[in-house]
Amino acid sequence: MIAPRRYLPSVSALLAFEACARLGSATQAATELSLTQSAISRQIKTLEEQLGVELMARQGRQLVLTQVGQDYVREVREVLGRLAQASINARTDRQSGVLTLAILPAFGMHWLAPRLSGFSAAHPEVTVNLSTRLRPFSLGPSPFDAAIHFGHEDWPGVHYMPLLPEIVVPVCAPDLHGAPFDDPAAMLAHPLLHLETRPRAWARWLEAVGHADAPPHGMMFDQFATMAQAAMHGLGIALLPTFVADPYLKSGQLKLASDKTNESIGSYFLVWPDDRPAPRALRAFCEWLETQAKSVQ
Image 1 (cartoon, helix red, strand yellow):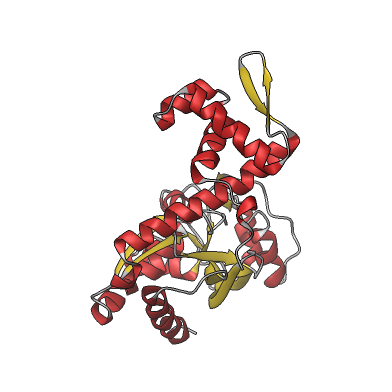
Image 2 (cartoon, one colour):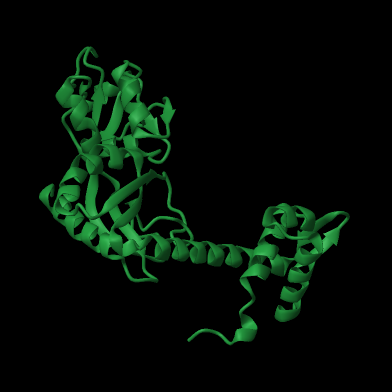
């Protein structure tokens, strides 16, 4: 049930309030919204009277948020974002087959993208748009229908579909003398390359293969792709997911530093909002993706 109308401010008032909160000026908000400064001030005053609280106070020439206003504007931005996205969806007709996904760069490039032609062939009515994101975000006000998530089931407000665990293997330049090493501890004599989001990856791998030696510090990277390039150019040994390493190994650009593998700290999931029905295009994608994930297990 929708709340009583007295608790539902006008969209115009919410837009005026959000713009003032972001810009700190009724004049700048008026310019952005193509209104007069007095119209913006009236909208905010009406909003405050409707809620019975002060949302903004003047400090010199600046408008600043009260504590209540700071809390309220976060909710307002999310609501306005979701309303705008709902309007876009209605206008473009999501049922017609546009699916917008947020993907992790390495997983999207090396695992998902090579398989997408199969989905396109099975569902030519669906257009898949991809955009990379490195960390979880709020799906609600975003333009995305779903996202690829790495880790555990710790992203609030979403449904989860498990895809696959991350299995890692050490790789190096083809001319690294002695590789692949029979004794994994021998790799400690060479520079080890590290990923920002997996700071203990080498320590876990060494422990899994029976070595408690602390790995040396080394170059740090934010993406597997750049770390793989560094390994190719002889800057050290990289610990890569098998789906990232395989193309480089098959082409001879990298070789195994050891044939021992280990499961990483998490798994890959497809996630989508749990507060609204999944559109037809997303349901079709979920069914297809589930079969792809099962085929590699």
